[in-house]
Image (cartoon, rainbow over all chains, first blue to last red; front, side, top):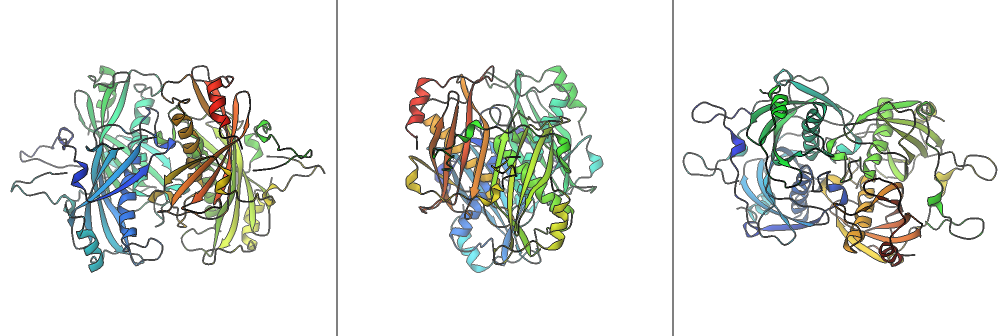
Length: 158
Length: 158
Length: 158
Length: 158
């Protein structure tokens, strides 16, 4: 979206490809079953579904750790940016290991990194970013991350 | 994923937020109905669904223009990167206008930009990138974009 | 599930196929765009997605008529049974017309019938039932349908 | 859909509710992780998603048993009818056990019954039918079920 490089020309960012991360790069891992419906007409898990793995691993970690209560908690996470690089395909009935770490913790926002691994693979099939801003449920205004959130998130710091 | 700024430190990319694009910035527009199931527990279209709008508008344009035949054509598009910035919420039963333009055409790859507009809004509720590599259906190896594809894509050049 | 016919033998219900309904059999109609992701590996809209069309047309009618407020209303609908018969295929980028009528209004429950029509077809590609029980949002206990609900639903009585 | 009872009056089928099946009623069981996106605005797995569990357990059994090859096999399954009764709610991050048995094997069609169980529950949270007609991939005409399919399906006969 309009990023500009040092020469004042639009960056051809599609040329830049990160290297796939390793399973050992991540502190938290969740196994997720694929579903028949995940596959698209080309026989692979559709690109959209990868983001369903992303917000599943993020929210599950926060719920398991006791900080996020989607039904009644006063702090909820709204998504402001996501990104994914796709390296190799995953297909139903593969299992997916969604692996999570925290890149950056701000005052109200957290940038997570997620790697998706096919079955027992050690190298990511896809990886990306997921940026949450934490807001008050009622006002939907950003709140400073409570101390228990900071502690829980700190465990996943890259 | 490991981008590094001029000082050799990891870029805090979550701080950088593009400005929302306008509906007039896009050459092709498609109206998409939202579905009850699109809303998540917070009452808004879930972040994952935005990418379903992305690949709908890209593929529909290519099919309408007669270049992509998902069932039998020799050239198919594989997704290698996607990204989305979320500015404001969309909720069922809103309509979404998915607007498309082409940022970059490479030898085998195309970087699309998509803006998503709520109902009659002129300013994007969300926008992002969608990078396709075009491959041979059988070998899944990149192919040089055929001339008719280049022509069809050229119409959407930003 | 264990239904038994007059002879005390399990009913072979899979043999019984209803006849497709006509578009004229329905009082309310909603056009829904298909999405790339709706197609499965066989190139047709996946059977699961038909139910997303069902609950979209039901809830949209109730919201448009001003009786259902999913965010804050005191009465919400919980689904207790759904069923679909599939006659012919629908594929992205087809449009779907979801057509709605009411088969039965009980004290707290409503049985809807939905026909799904491909583009301008007059004969249903699929049709089915969708049974809602209306409950109090807080207690999740069935409530007697309020008069304005009965009126709105009565307009769609078959 | 217009079913008529012995008195010539429309059957009030919404009144008939089967009893929930037990986990022990099923021969094949598959654990499926729920996803954040499965929950709808009321905080429970949306009714549509149950059918994604249905076709996941059916197709996974057929793939594991070596009879279904979705990419290249000559016989594929098309869905002609599905139905689900919902008894109690499931919510992310619950696990779901999808349990499968075969109610009826015809010449070309199979009627499956599926029970969905929340975590370690012994009583189904939901259950339903899923009817496949097996067809030739190319002609999409029904085929007589091959002997190896009959054998594999016979193992799940209720």
